Image 1 (tube, rainbow, N blue to C red):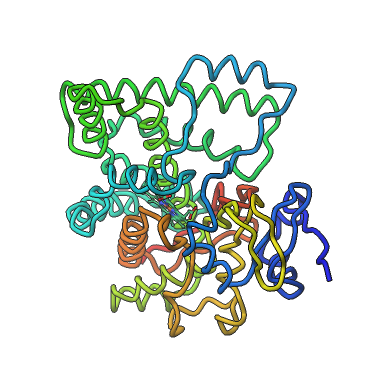
Image 2: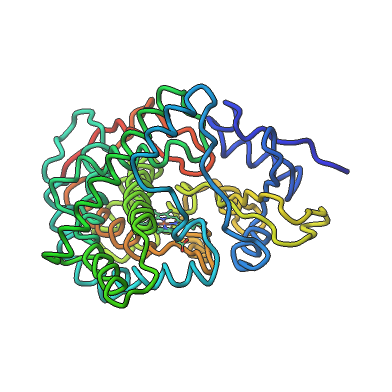
Length: 412
Ligand code: HEM
């Protein structure tokens, strides 16, 4: 029996993904989507199978929507002034993917993160100390967002005065992923992305002359080495895309996650108390909040051969939307899957960071930032209560999270 297609671009799906996915999961583990004609996969075991089989499920698929026809010429003219968009990590397969990952891997080793931790803690303490007591604030703007922007700037070696630009560039980069901006918005996003390319090219050039600590200097050196060897050269378009992926992924998901975690358990004083008494408790709190929030709601793949998933025949070349958000609430794996329970036995079994070859390169960084954030906040607050109407969410079936988080901090 064919399952009816799910409209993943409908207001209902974008506004209430948890409810919609629960309903779909009950009907089918694999079902077609409308209007795109993809295959949506909702079950934990099948999503995991897809993540772990990069040969059958290729990442060479664009996550961006197509530009609207009305603005196509204007967008093409803006793009012509910069470097072509290419695929670096997220949109590539081995062997290119392996090579690109090696170019940036060492910035994310446990050792590298360990040396960054005291700095992240200091930044978190500064931000937490500035939070006012007993008045409604936008917690996302005052805490959730600045911390990851600060951390990824450090990791990359991006000048700190660029911090405000990161927000604008990231918004532009993700706004066409899994959502449909208006033609006017598209043009603005393209202008911001051109601005990003020009600014980042200047930073790469500056690092060739005067290397600063961080990933950027290493990449600038990679260009210099290839030039010296008269090889085919590391293309500027590749480096700009690679850095864009790191800049965007490095703050969008983590910033949204920290705010969403607060919405999930922030009003529960016992959670804050337990973190205060045992700072390691923050580790499982973060894992459980990651499961429930799934900041990356789904990952995209394309089949490289005919496959059968849960009895559904899927031809080669079919685009697959594997729902991490659905897998993370699969009732077969998690008892009372909608309940926040950091003490559950399988708290680390979630797929919020994906898995396999493309498993999030920044998972360690995101975990460290989030754990440190909760530990620092626990020392300073008794609770953080999200307002009944806490604000808007990004309406995307790929990257979802609060755009703002109105909440009241109760200081100790
Ligand atoms: C809570 C925060 C985060 C979540 C939930 C998250 C989630 C994910 C997921 C699910 C993937 C896999 C995508 C796929 O398989 O197609 C991924 C990949 C990636 N993430 Fe994260 N991420 C987070 C934070 C970060 C941070 C802090 C960075 C910092 C650099 C980062 C950089 C990346 C990159 C570059 C990739 C592509 C990796 C590849 O394709 O090899 N992420 N992330």
